[in-house]
Image (cartoon, rainbow, N blue to C red):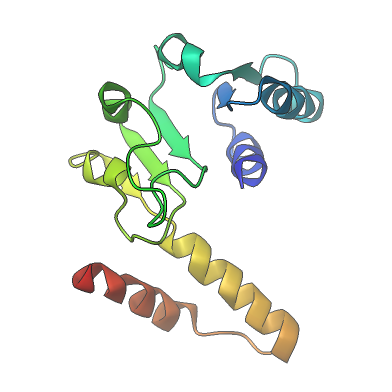
Length: 148
């Protein structure tokens, strides 16, 4: 998921990205691949220990790990960093508002509901050859938020 999100962001001309992963080799491999594809200096790698320094001037945060999902409660990063930047995206959709997004009130915050819907719509098209009603699917995806 992190690879797909990083690719999408860089395709949309986002500024430099810092890839953070507990596995240094994995973070470095992704950053290297992104730099080869999008140009040197577009991505760098960090471990969670270097997160504070790596995000010092960031204006946004995208979370793609399973931390915070129903079976793995809690924040994926220290609480003080949850206030980082003006935009926060958490690809989780269960719970519909993970704790990270709950702390992002007042900022642009997106959950994984759209990801769930658009992946499902594309799978539906591939299997049936028909277009799914994405608007209706988005409305239904928002319904669990009321029951959480």
